[in-house]
Amino acid sequence: MGTEQDEITIVSRAASELTPAELYALLRLRVDVFVVEQQCPYPELDGRDLDADTRHVWATSSDGRIVGCLRVLREDDGVLRIGRVCTADFARGTGLGGRLMRTAMELVGDSECVLDAQTYATGFYAKFGFEPEGEVFLEDGIPHITMRRR
Image (cartoon, rainbow, N blue to C red):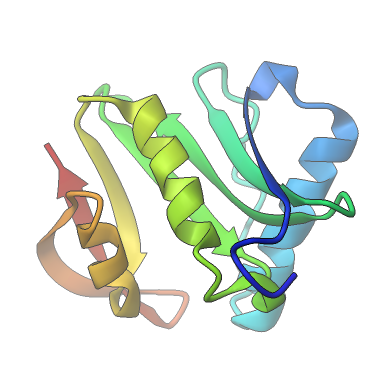
């Protein structure tokens, strides 16, 4: 995969619709990016992936690999949260993240939505109507800021 023109399929499924193999592949990509590549040993398995309200969005390449993903959760206060946004290292810079976020925004619709962005990515999320709020904070040693779209 090298360009946005490569054949990519975007998939969106509720947690209850995931096959074990799909869940495994999603978790593996997230661990590869967040835990291994970014060297952040944290509890990736947070118990939210199989919540009834969780929706997973991912991109599959023509050879069957999951090359990017995110999830949409509903918080206790009813606000939707986009999280675990990641792409495989070889797929970055191809527009894949934007495609995933556009799908997430279709799921979110007009609902209020929040995410915690790595600070270098605030411009990316701003393209989807998210605005920074609060102060920068460290999560696993990486600067983040909460961003909200109302």
